[in-house]
Length: 530
Image (tube, rainbow, N blue to C red; front, top):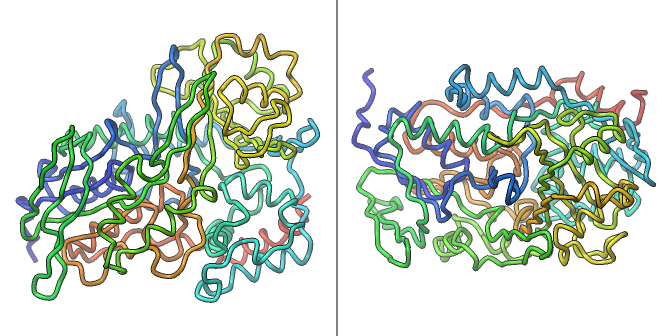
């Protein structure tokens, strides 16, 4: 059977994050679209979405966050197996695999308590906690409904080492969705053993913008994909055509001017709805990052506009209307001397890139840091070092600065961190020339908020002919949000379904079906691996 001719088919992709970049690549690689017929619209002046990395050694580098990756991200590795690394010597997937053979994550200080590191902390779960975890893992999502984690666990659970490690690794809060926690328990069953040493967690060579976004952007550029930056899509007009809803035009705003982009019959529209990093703000060494709301930017506004009167397109208010439950702060530190990295290396017993996340359990802010392998940025000078950190309880007074993190500039955040490390006496040396940039993200865990069935639309909403949605706020059974994998899976699903291809994304890895993984997880939860 001959392939359909798609050389004239056009695709309009709304949003410049990894979901749209992946969708463009899949449309070209698997759908035979021409790159010149694909346009990506992004409201900011750069692409990458949450996979960001910017700055320089003089003004400070900034990464708002870094998504965890592991060996079972099958969609991610499928996509990047087709994308050469920037040096062209191998694929991005090969680069990641080879790099993680060289440096394997193995934390010797996952938690710090009372100023002392804890090597391979015991989980400290009671039998009741373990039974609740096991029940949660097998409970149907329909029965869990919109319940929160606190609806299932007692207060003691949230003081266990297990919760401190699980919550900070994935950024869960006690009030988040029990369904999402259940999905994480099931999805990462194979990683419970060794979780107290972060075994199995993988990293890219550089930050994820330089290691993932830039190679993919280069691949798309070489194929002629068009990028319309500084362009906000305000609305998508739909019409009923032969019983199906068809996207027929996009309303846009660019540089103060407005207009409409026609969508020809048969052409495709794929929109990333919502945004984890929308309305983010960056502070300075002396000034805190401000808290913005959904009106700063267009991602939430677009979803609200197209979902009005169309319940099949989800309920954005559920995710955008609870900033107090979805916000937290990160900070990126650029250092001009090696004093801090030497301090942390000697304290933890891990070299940079090997240890992963370090969480200060006693910190009122519940602060964590990670020292990546250096350089963390392409072109980063040899005498500059960069690390990242974040905190989940940003409105509580700090233990050493006496102010909420949300009211602190970078200097105060560094002062608090050095206090947690018991190194306040070295602050003058360490902070000489240091640049700590705080970042406030009002919606960073909005995808974890308790939700009802239907709050997240299907990737290909029923009754829509040429329209699909991608990103962190669409519904994909079995997989987990807050991951690169979720976005790329949604992109594959959208492309294959809109094109009517007889293929699906690689199936979600289900390690919970392997009795060996269950046995190892059982032993780990009971602290029997020592």
